Length: 166
Image 1: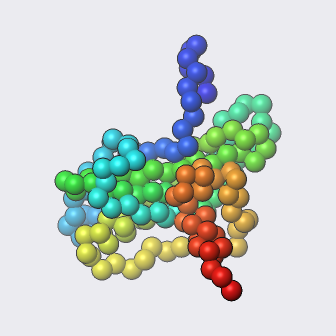
Image 2: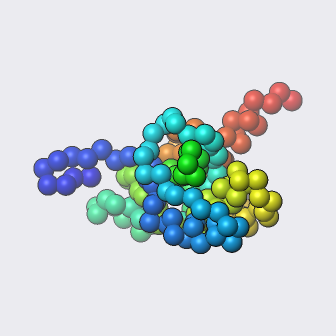
Image 3: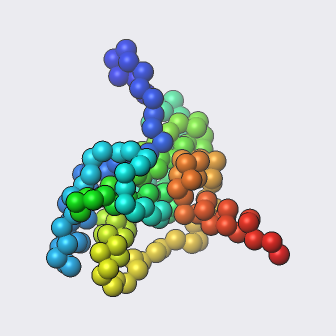
């Protein structure tokens, strides 16, 4: 990606503080109050959890013929920090046609999954969020930045299955 004459390196993930209001609304049902933690570092969190959300990607390469794609397996690493703070790395995916890195547009599953995990970590009994996965295309690990960074729930399942000796 270019801005003026500066070349910016594309990151494998994104944070979505703009969705905190939706998370906050779901937490208020249980009287919980969390704040979005804007600092993004590998360490310093108290707890972490890998999950996935759903959304849509658009290829940022103007020369690519790919219109875009939807995904039911967008990797997310949710992290809890002291002081009732959290953040969630949402891992980008690569375009199958040109390999450009794309940031997703997220659906409501993001807020639902984040709120669910924060409630669980707060020892509140909750029903698991609805999962509408399945019946889609197979997960393409080589295009998933979550898999490459060890935070994709699907990639982790594959690794665990390979470790079993039958």
